[in-house]
Length: 224
Image (tube, rainbow, N blue to C red; front, top):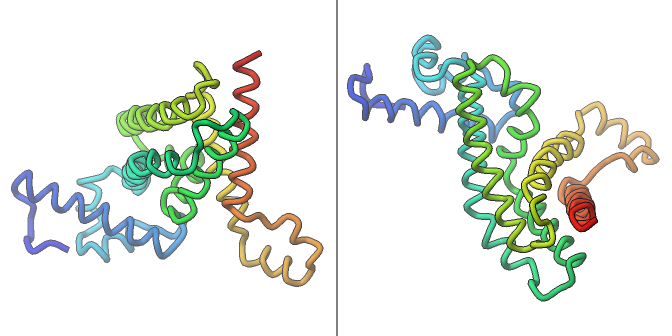
């Protein structure tokens, strides 16, 4: 991945670090998080596993940084999508539905972000040092604040509850993504018994409905 044997300068170390991140991101496009291993990453990036661990303390530390990167890209792209999808002159109930639809649609093609969010608490926040955990959480707070500000802009009726809604939305994304991607065994069961397909979820549709419910409930509680 790089044309030098050892990274001697800070610039070379950063090039190698980015190569590790980019290679892991490419792997996530091909396979689920559980199959991303340091051994395969080392092979693809052209470094010994011990050298990879000089740049990141664990597999999970790499994935947390990728989650932050994907999250930042989403936060940067989301305002234009929400602006186009929400009619500011509509009643609050309609704006809440439109906001939910815009957010859900924005995630339809962000497989890596959704995969990482679904594994955040159960997998990615384990096997990392307190320093790495704290650095990630500080970045997550900034990312949540960006989305909360956007929610408040289009749904001022949220009042001080925009951050609360955003945190619930992020948890919903991970949960719905997991349930909307059934295992091969479950897909076979659906095919064998069509009556079971009532439990087969479409990611965007289900997420939109859940986000709309969360937004409506948060607004109702804020105005109570």
